Length: 102
Image (cartoon, rainbow, N blue to C red; front, top):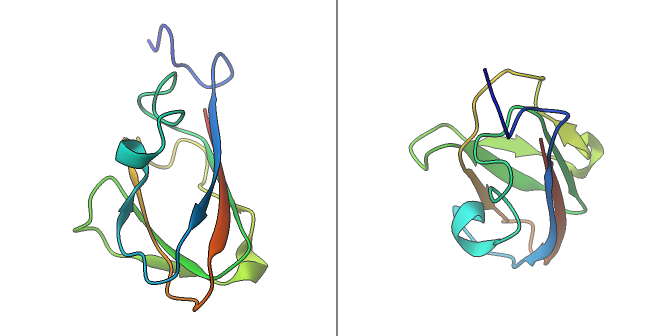
């Protein structure tokens, strides 16, 4: 059914800084190592050290604001077919973000 980017067969990973005030940061457009081997993610783990807001697939989707205590955030397995992630940092400090996709 999912010949190449089936969960458990391949993954993508990136670690990057997200400036404070950054809104709807387009992860796919700005992080070349994500959504490369995994074009549609079904398993996502996001680590972060500052409060961030996350939207999946479109900037028109509702934002989930996550405090640091929710890191790492793992989207329920096979909950969504994720083709992009949008991040907002309004914490007042630069956030370090690490994302695993499978």
